[in-house]
Length: 362
Image (cartoon, rainbow, N blue to C red; front, top):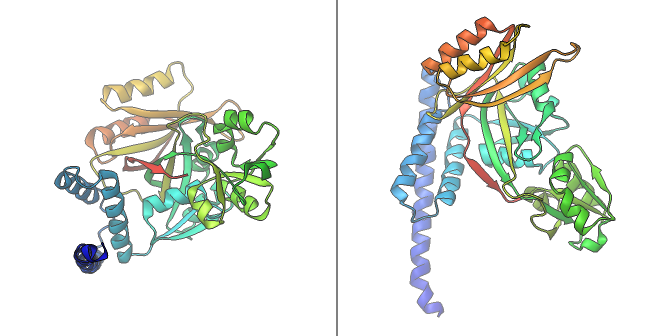
């Protein structure tokens, strides 16, 4: 049998060697492009070019190699080559191995430098002050709704949205031993605890839950205490040497979290984009209806609207809107000009590529 495998394995080795040489050549070309962009002061990231690469490769593949795996492989290749032009530093809600950390790795790849911070506000502050290039923060969950600390931070800090990541999340119960009998308390962020409420009530009703500020913090606690179980990410299992007790304990399938990438500047159009705005309306009857009518007449799809109270001003609200399209698109640009003229407060939060949903082995 070993003799029969030898020529096949030799063929695989030859292909792997060829792939490696081509990757090195691609990296060299990417560095040359980076130098040309430096000379012409062009942006390092071209979202439209990347989308065209994915579309072209998917068409050429014709489903022979699994499309999702193909996208994942080339995402890592493309981000690594882009980072060779300029190293990227990313701040996220820590500690290590939170779902936000996992979202950052899925967006920027393994080659970026990641810095865990204690709060979402800290992420915004670091980006605003220029101490890190990008931050990544959760903004909403398909089951539990919006993450208010993220929305409130947009009112306080001057940053721009550069991108988004949507991840389908499956929650696992983990602990040091992997034995459910050892668990006396279940710790996690409040949202995962809420998303697994019924499973916990049915299967370990005697175990109290302990909300902590991140899933990574819960994983740390589980690593240090054999009687604590955690609901945490797949990255946390590897990082903190934990064992899976039960996979997929979420109460509803299709649980998806949306994360936003924040920075100083929004990217150029990709062809499939969103524009986010922060607005406050004049105090008059029908003001909200007037704004929505303007968007509708411009033939622009309103993807999201959310209100948040303004701190220190009773019964005053700011509205977050997501429009489909880029601020550079003529109809979006004209619509935003009209809204700016009519609103008592107007801020363009950014235009950025729409995310494909990425699965998270959580």
